[in-house]
Image (cartoon, rainbow, N blue to C red; front, top):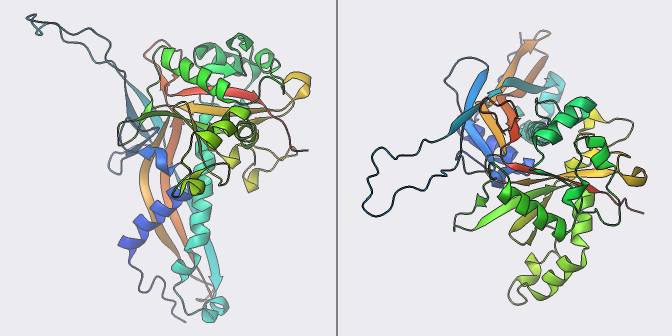
Length: 377
């Protein structure tokens, strides 16, 4: 029987972290993922505990006054409010089967040659799972799969951290009614809406804590639907800011969004476009050809489409890594003529919520912003 040797010369120790790093980068959320509770996407690495549920700790800010002067601190310590959320995880695998005839054509390592395809698959899997988490309802059901009653419960539980268009008064405890208030004149994404969402985050109870950069600056990050981002980018205030308030010398042009694609920063908010808020995963294309969790068809005023955007602070999403990406191989089949190489990983993802026994399930780190969409002509 013909012998097939797979993975020859491949250093698995180097392959795994490189695969993970490049996959995360391709997901588009890498810059905001980290193992600290202060990160927007809180990553928990847990390869040891048993069971299919990992508990993620949630920590509230201290709100007491402390003591002053010669007052004794003993007996006046503040209790740290601690909550948690359980995230379930599962295995995800994919592979490419290759015949002996194809193997003979290539003198390169099978896994190394096919790593880009597997990495692209894993990155798309992770990205769409994370996107689905952003717009889940209070019980964890994705918006597209939720009943009208479940959607109403979500906006009721999160009444201090949802925004429908330009005005807080657009809010209604019936989600369909609130969405129907959004028109394509006043309620497209603008810096005015972004700044209002930021004020909502700062005054919500509990507060949504801003994301902090390494140099100590505080930002909220809004992940935007592409058509909402288009409206923001062409807004007169944003254009004026980029014309007059950005660097003109050195490499200023290289970083100016008027000339280069990329994030927009205004009033302490980083706006990041997420194309997949519009487009569905290839395997999930529906008759509307949109991502039905974040692109809501015909629900606005005069049947306008509505895009969902997410102003995020710390611990918006929880991500559990149970098993790092691992190369897998298929034993020879059909008398050694067919073999396969693939990847196996295990993880879980969930939007993090406050649930300290009250059952309200408020989103921990997100203001959900609904804006009307103006389609391309």
